Amino acid sequence: MAPTVSALNRFSFILIYLLLMLSSISIGIMISLLPLVARTANIPDVLIVSAQAITAGSWIFVAGAWARLARRRGRKFVIMIGGVGLSLGCFATGGVILVAVTGLVAPMAALAMLVAARITNGAVGLAVVPAAQAFVVERTLVSRRTIVMSSLASAQTLGTILGPAAAPFMTHIPGLGLAGPMVLVATLCTLILPVLAFILPHDRPPIATTPASEATASAAEGVWRMKAMRGYLMYSTIMATAAIGLIQTIGFLILDTLAGAPEEAQFWIGQAIAAGAVATLLVQLVITPALKPTPQTMMLAAPIISIVGLSMLALVPGYWLIVLGTVTANIGFALGRPGVATAASLVLPISRQTELAAAILSTASAGVVIGPVLAVLLYSVWQPLTFLLLAMSQVAALVIALRNRHPASPRIGEANLRGET
Image 1 (cartoon, rainbow, N blue to C red):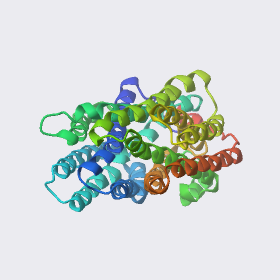
Image 2 (cartoon, rainbow, N blue to C red; image 1 turned 180 degrees about the vertical axis):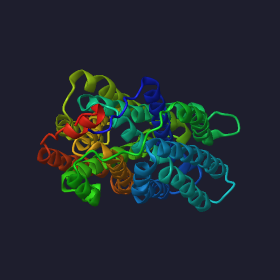
Image 3 (cartoon, rainbow, N blue to C red; image 1 turned 135 degrees about the vertical axis):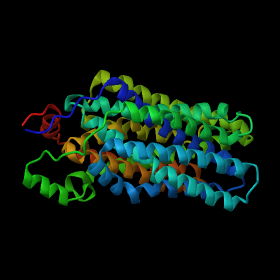
Image 4 (cartoon, one colour; image 1 turned 90 degrees about the vertical axis):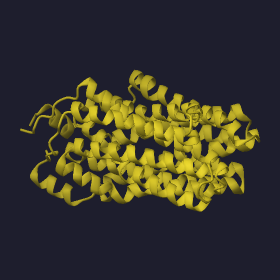
């Protein structure tokens, strides 16, 4: 008989939700502030985006180590380490922004300091995401996994809404200016960590529940090398690259469309990003629970909808058409990313969910490395080129979804949660 895993109580889920939301808020704030910080501190656009990409890419090199640590020490242990890294990374980022925009250091020195601060957030702080996801998944019945995964995704989406929307107001904190948003997020994270440590139930290191021969073969084969995972990981990489490339480029597109001062455009940049995030939130918290689509249906619908939105942006439109295109594209991404995460989670046993979640997050990190740099470079050549290329990437995602339509068996995960044989 497999070991029984206790269900997650509502308050523990709320705490995990809040921590994931704070992690996403910090990223949303950075995406919203990067154009303004670059122009104010005289850092070239491509270089500051490249710095963010490098720091996000740091996760790829440490993801496996965090997954192995979670297997040895449990998910909660890694969640707490990630929370500390998130807090420190945000405090450091706020400090760098403060000295950069006030001219206390040279632009290139500020850029180097920003890379170091963001690496702390990327290499350590992001450990929260896969550990928390696996912590919740192993306590969720397979029949509810699509809804729960969408709810977790909505935490990150809500952070994307609150970050850009609130950033203009948080920049008015006396003495902090543009550094205010990151310092405030770090403070909130620091306050929630002790409560999380006390309330979140301790978990034992996950125990393989597959037969011995299957478990041995599974342990010998990394998630990235598994043939059954290749399509899902490729799809996730494409979706993450397109979503992040779009969000990063929107700020520059709005700056050039409005042709005003960076400070004046910050409000409109935040509103456009927030509008797309609101659409994402509605999909993940309202539409998905109501319609209960299968993960395969979500994977198929996502690229089709995103192509429509990206095509609108390729028209070099006015501000409100930019918002409409952003909203439409984000509806597609809102279906695709939790859809592929759920579909992939049904293929592997519970004992490997942290590894899978780390691999999925690595695809997002790869998207941060590839998407913003490539998108901004293409944008500097010809504005519509970025959105045309992103639309083409969605065609590739659609092809992958068509080739991965086979449903996975929920037997292993369901048995582990219920303690069945």
